[in-house]
Length: 230
Image: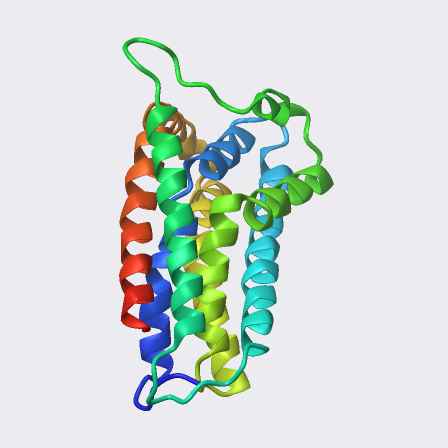
């Protein structure tokens, strides 16, 4: 149970950084942009967006249900179980941040991207949907974010309806950076090619640095919240 006075707004505030952590993921954004620059832009990108949203919902819902099964705690007492989980998740994020930072390109070396990106032009809508689910639901960083959000939501004192609203908010934020370019393309396709290419170039170049800083900040915040639970 969440401490008295922590309502839906407080829970949303706690999961906001985690949702942003999923949203600011350069690789899926680059993948979506490449799809939008491919021959099957419209259908493949819609499938990818649907898969991305589905993966986010599946992950955060699963961890919310798992977290709700944890032993009930006195709302006025310390929460060692929640605190330990948050400390572990925060430490994992710091490990990922170090890995990203050490893997950044040096000097004039071109950034390395996943090999599967070279096959994006040939993706069907169904394969695009599957790729979206894989990148959102099975990515280690996103799983850690979903686990952190699930702990907050599952151990809150919100009603089922409020929990659904919180999960919708989490999903909307987490999926926003993939949704925006796709929706923009569907509305004004003829104007999007140049901006999308410029964004793709920047994301490819700064991918590892952006992720390292993001993971570091969220990891430190989660460790702080974990310490505060004891």
